[in-house]
Length: 231
Image 1 (cartoon, rainbow, N blue to C red):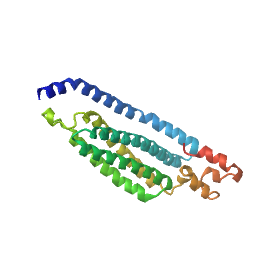
Image 2: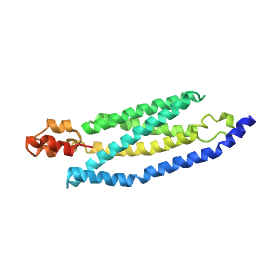
Image 3: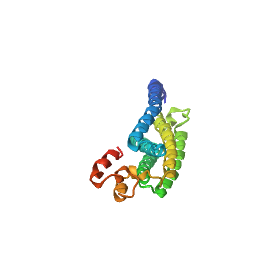
Image 4: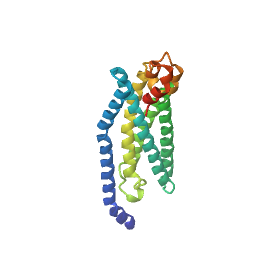
């Protein structure tokens, strides 16, 4: 027992450094949001033109794609991190369950991206349910990781607590923004955005679509479509 106490005290400095590094990383992500949004608005202006309403819809969709990419990365990273500790930790059931939840959530994000391009309501509504459930699960994760037990030999999560907390807090924030942006995109379904984000729809509706390639001659269709394709 005394060896465990000495060892736990010896890693206090490392835990503090880890917490500070995670906090700085999280603040850096938040600080980048303003420049990300300005870049999205500029790209929307270049692609859409002067139509402010359509610019806003395109910006919301583009911001959603950025959020999905970032969230998938951190969901998979968080799942791998927790699952790797579950290989030897006596808190393995909790960590394996966390890995499964992160993987399911990442899959639902791909479904949300597909549904937002195709303008299907059902997958978006399903993600809203999954996203809210995921938020609840993340809060439950935090309640498991904290507070620190008074006895070190009862501290099941002493290795994963700091970085695990970072994953939980970051994902709680980004899931909330995805829920809001996804709902906004769903509200804009049927208002002309699909012609700009779903090339297959624009191609099939050539001649009747609001997309820019539908307004020119057929010979210029391919070149114009490449200009307006979502990057």
